[in-house]
Length: 232
Image 1: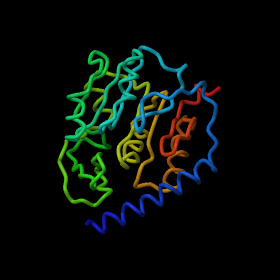
Image 2: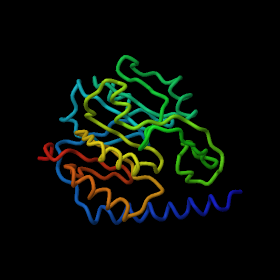
Image 3: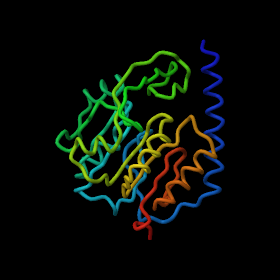
């Protein structure tokens, strides 16, 4: 039994629980048109349906074993690129039925620099790996990671219309890199997962607001931001 890992999970859970209750009391989402749920279960996200277009370039960072949101975007005509370098995600995508002409899976990670990172195995009963070693397992695999800027250049994209980040606690580094590199998706979906805190989430909301994002929805740990021009 991993006592340290169990204590870490308890500590992270308490921080996440506090953020779930305090942040909605501090920040009121703005109206951003009609929101609809896309995807299923843990893979579901609320997005402004009237802002989705068939020519959108969508980057979905983090797959695990749930890509229903990515698939539904593709089925609605968007060009979707899903990223996850972990063995679990790679095996899952190999067996998943999805429109391969509109959804491209790339087995690489997204990070704040181009590097190789360790992705740590989760505790028993948990699926997704994490660079943060949130369960203190000490068992890991190494995988290639790239910045959003590098990936965009390699794929020939000059914009990201929708960005989803669901990366088991590694969201802050990706957001900092996105801000520094002046990447401004029209729609930004992010899970503020552990390790997190109320202060960390609040500071990130303010950081995104300074560069033109408005908070449009909160669903437990899933947050929706849109560019201020989309606010009605």
